[in-house]
Amino acid sequence: MATVDGTTAPSSGKTAVVASESGGGRYGRPANNSGAHLALRALLFSVSLSALVVLVTAKQTVMVPVVLRPPQVVIAPVPAKFTHSPAFIYLLAALCATCFYSLITAISSLRLLSSSSACSAKTLFLLILLDVLYAGVMASATGTAGAVAWLGLKGNSHSRWNKICNVYGKFCRHIGSSTILALVASIVLVLLAFLNAYSLYRRTR
Image 1 (cartoon, rainbow, N blue to C red):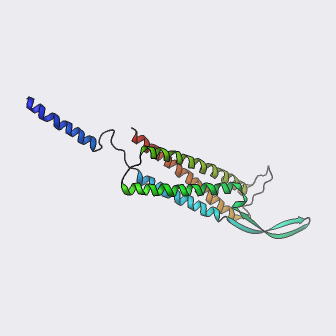
Image 2 (image 1 turned 135 degrees about the horizontal axis):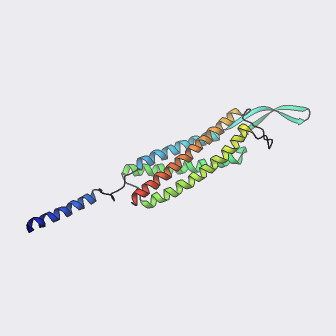
Image 3 (image 1 turned 90 degrees about the horizontal axis):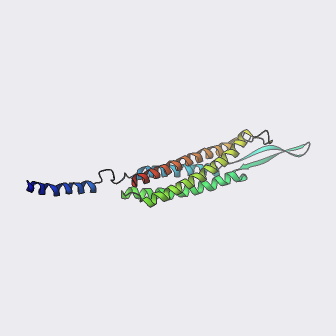
């Protein structure tokens, strides 16, 4: 009877070691989310780059009547460019930074996916901070550009600001499309921050 107990004890200990090394149990190795990270990073890059291209091409020149001295009126070309508004320049800077950031992180995610390795906890924490930072920058730039675009679309009768989108239709379509794409980029950054936070939570359970 003592012999049976002595032979079964080492086998149970070996089984426990094997189970621990295979990653089973509550404290096993967390799942690798590099594929989801790469997909979201690639989406962020494509959206931010599209918004950047659409914003840069927001230019239109229209022949409008210009009053020199009443009643003298001449028809002159008046251009509308995104550089005429500081809000759109701010959006341009935010999109450039986000596009570059998404490209760098997408390459890093691709390397992790090809090597079948997971991010360290320190890297995940750093990505959370950067994603939140860029999400805040993009959200503020989108809100600022959206407010100016809304004034161009609807105007403001109280402050006597006339709408211009009834004249500069192409220009306003470019601005509106770029603002919507920038909003999508902000949402993707928030999703990335949540995904990284979840991965870090699984890592520290």
